[in-house]
Length: 234
Image (cartoon, rainbow, N blue to C red):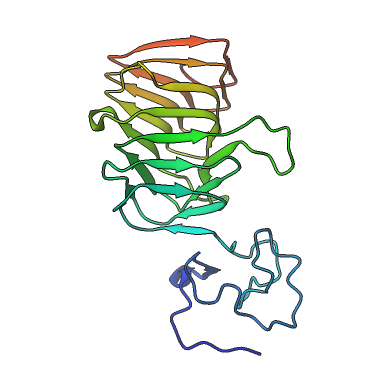
């Protein structure tokens, strides 16, 4: 048996939600002789303390906990949990193939430097596409926002956006050397929102969104793409 004397960092103990936050000191701190195989991967190879240890609802053992604005160029790889609203502050962000970026409820990522989310086709196991999504089933991410005034170069391929308020929001992004292709927008309130932008998207899918695409004072060239089962705008 193990004990800790720190705040266990429950998600919301006042509402009887005793799931652990991703930065909880109780993660991977249970009895090392206990079974842990029922916890979803990545599980750190050791049971979590608390009510959900060794259950399918156990909190993941994340590789990165994103909780503050960038102070340098950054690379994300593996499992990333965004627990606060994060800004890249003009620094570059590279997301490696196969990475899952999972957002706590309402949290967003704002990008103003170079952004590379360059996944690969899902021909390997585990798959090498990149995922941006709400973390738990009840978590709706705010979205991934690109501010073109930051002057960054964007390469976004084989990446998916799901369970969000706005999956991908682009403001003042003028397509020149940017690449947006093989994207999936699924189960969002709004899949793609363009504001004062000129861009091209190819070989992408917009499916089961409340609103597929919103284009506000923007020019969008959409080619070899599929829009299906969206309630509005595609």
